Amino acid sequence: MPDRGNSRVDVVSVRLAFGDRRVFDGLSCRFSQAKISVILGASGVGKSTLLRLMAGLQRPNYGDIWIGEEEISRLPERQMRRVRKRLGMMFQGGALLDSMTVFDNVALPLRERTRLREKEIAERVHAQFEAVGLKRVDSLLPGELSGGMKKRAALARAMVTEPEILLIDEPFSGLDPLAVRLIEALLVEVNHTKGLTMILTNHHIGSTMRMADEVVFLVDGAAISGTVKEIKESPDPRLQRFLVAAGTGPALEDAS
Amino acid sequence: MFELVRDVGWRTIENVHGLGGITLFGSRLVYETLVPPYRLRRVIDELYNTGVLSLAIVCTSGLAVGLVLGLQGYNTLVRFGAEQSVGAVVGLSLVRELGPVLTALLVTGRAGSAVAAEIGAMVATEQLDGLRMMSVDPLDFVTQPKALALALAMPLLSALFIVFGLFGGYLVGVGLLGVDAGTYLSSLENNIDFRNDVLGSLLKSVVFGALVGLVATWRGYTSAPNSAGVSRATTGAVVQASVATLMFDYVITALWGVGV
Image (cartoon, rainbow over all chains, first blue to last red; front, top):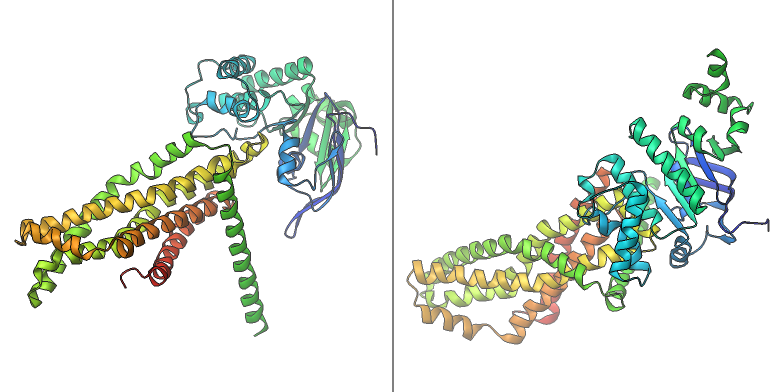
């Protein structure tokens, strides 16, 4: 067995198909401990599905998924609940419970998983609100928040239990450039201060290039991995086409 | 011919699979109800949503059904000179059949559909996955309180339906058509048997409540994660729960001996 850090994630020879549609065919990639890894790729290539595989919300047809030293792809749901205590996940739409206030949403994992008293829970929730830059949202319902605030509340909920690994699905989608910069800075700060392993899916090339330690580019059911520099300099034409279309590839940089 | 056999076979397998799925789902609901944590606060909230918010429609419908039963019963009985038995006709019809069955159909339409749609929407917006990621079992946290609330609310709503129905029959029989008030009430009292009628009615409403709760939460929980899935779950919950209510009504009547 290869040497695995406690919060490293390894995806090994994963195959996944929905009916006749093959999403991954022998996909292998690695996400290092305490780094920010960004999963990049065109729409529909399976970025969110890969996150769901790592979260155990989707099971592969074949292959292994390692969270640290534990292989999770065939764990029963009851045991998966134990593994998920090490994970936090921010969904693209937030996935906040509509019927609960923002405070109760963020307090929920603490109430369900810990024996903390209400006062301590309130302190931790408010500390999270402060960390993500949310003010006076305690009694609001998720439906009363803007898109950016919803994402921050979802991030607060994902981080409140202090997970080792944070899975983040499209944190910048639907946000204005200022909000993108704010969330980007927040994620980098959390990564640096808490040493979380962060795995993001992202369409936003600019933010990827600024914040990523590692990039996993998904194409044709497989992955091309490397640092930002390695990815930019990769000779793979599929990757270059994607970067050029996004305006950050060598072709455009040369032209400018 | 081969395709017909294949289709029939495939549908049979699908139906058996679905039946197995809902049975396992129901078993887990019962298990989560019996073992801690007991989510009393959430059950009370759901009782308000399914029970209290159904009061108006159930009471109004009960009154309307009682009014019609009183009128129809009187018009039929008067031909045989038996109009003094209108209380018994109204009471027996309501207690044995119309109370539990119509309440179940009304609650299915108002609360069962809402439960299926709400859970379906939670599936579509990844709220249930969000709970799973917090190591919270959505079946325990979301569906069990809703199913339990429906099962608990149904007998109470059915009782209210019957009371308002009896009052409706009284209004028409006594107030409008001139039947003696004492005769109406004594006819009711003398003809309604506690074991056969009242306990049978209670048993029916408990079973119907459990059925509606099970079908509505199951359809929502297994819905496809999109708007079409929510729509199918809602429609399916109403149709399946209504049909199941009517079929189980016959079974309980036959086995319990209600009205025999």
